[in-house]
Amino acid sequence: MKLLDGRVVSQAVKDRLKTQTEERLIQGKKVPHLAAILIGNNGASETYVASKVKSCAEVGFKSTLIRLDGSVTEQDLLFKLGELNEDFDIDGILVQLPLPKHISEEKVIEAICASKDVDGFHPESVGRMVQGLPAFYPATPYGILLLLEHYGIETKGKHAVVIGRSNIVGRPISIMLSKNEYPGNCTVTVCHSHTTGLKEICLQGDIIIAALGRPEFLKADMVKEGAVIVDVGITRVPDATKKSGFTIKGDVDFDAVFPKCSYITPVPGGVGPMTIAALMMNTFKACKAKD
Amino acid sequence: MKLLDGRVVSQAVKDRLKTQTEERLIQGKKVPHLAAILIGNNGASETYVASKVKSCAEVGFKSTLIRLDGSVTEQDLLFKLGELNEDFDIDGILVQLPLPKHISEEKVIEAICASKDVDGFHPESVGRMVQGLPAFYPATPYGILLLLEHYGIETKGKHAVVIGRSNIVGRPISIMLSKNEYPGNCTVTVCHSHTTGLKEICLQGDIIIAALGRPEFLKADMVKEGAVIVDVGITRVPDATKKSGFTIKGDVDFDAVFPKCSYITPVPGGVGPMTIAALMMNTFKACKAKD
Image (tube, rainbow over the protein chains, first blue to last red):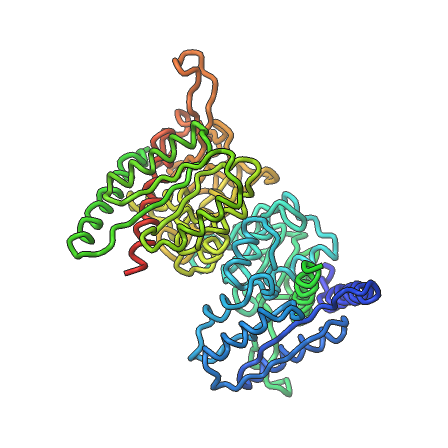
């Protein structure tokens, strides 16, 4: 019943990147440079992008924030991406999602050059990850791996149960955990809305990744004594006692599960902070690949 | 204990494609055209390619066989692929593997235009498949889905146990079976050489896909009564009683498992023939996508 503390590990990852970036400077090498495109003025997107730009500054990366009006045409956005693809100084490109409805997410993601796809959402990045070729891992599952690695969690031969099969978390983490590397080499079971006997399956999990987006779904009676619990959920639940009017809940019934497990991520402060650390790792790798 | 007969189903798929191709001809539409590149003179490769060319003729597709000397340079091969990519009449391109050692398999596969990648080995094809975008499914796992579909095997909510995590079979079939479509929506467990308690896991399988390449590995005591067994293995085992000196064995101890299961693929004559049927399906789709 030890916390997998995303804030601490995220900071450790960033500290390491900061040192490595300073070393690059001393060696006269290029400093990583992330370009972020923010379209319109969605409040959550503003916050996410601001946090990414701030993290770049913390680790010594360059960043360029490109703000586009919510009415920008798909063609103009694709043209902008073309420019960034061509720009040697830019190592990583991200387009903050969601996009306005008149723009195709698929087209935009596929327009980012795979060698600059630091979000790891391009089909080519996903395919390369699946096939074991060098690839950018998508940020949230990659953040989970960094967390497990930091705490030296043994994964080889362990049974990992993944609840959820989304393209951004459940599906990629299930693949990554079963790959022949560390963290990985797990036997992995992927569960979803059509799974029957979920409780019995979860009880077999040495590691459980809860990524279904239903607050407090994973109860204590679904968890084996000593399991490692990773909670990817982040749902706003109405809470009259809070000034904001809501509390953030994960997919795990934390208070009940905590005493039973060996390690658990808190929400907030678990997987969340790791996502940005993973993005910084990818941007560093994209830059280093050009050396 | 009914056979999943790959020869029968493969023929049914090809008969359907033949009818659809004839309909296209009547409608004045383009007929599917597969280009196959064969390098050197590996006996097994010769047989595989000949069989693909023959299948094209059976269903009314055009095919072009390009034979290149074993000493062909990587550059010349890539140039040839470039020509085929540009050629509007060619719908599907396959390069028979394995390649001579001086040629990079990764480079060659990635040189095939994703829209003509009927083998489904290009990282972009794999990524698109994972993300649920229209994609060419790799032939062997796609053939397994066609087999399950033909026999109307219920898959939703079933527990599928996949033994093996190879890029060409275990990994993709585990993803495909857990997708939100039919055949699919299985709870899927991926097992491999580091899996502990494999027997207990297999005993939970309503469907077992054995794709590890170890003859007669799956024994009767590892199989639940009524399970559906798909045997992807195909290993030559020395056999003095045979003229050829060997017998082909699958990964399943067929004689012992047969009485316990509801459905099982024989080896040979199970998954094998389905692979070519799946390739023909992909070639047809590649052509149709141009309509």
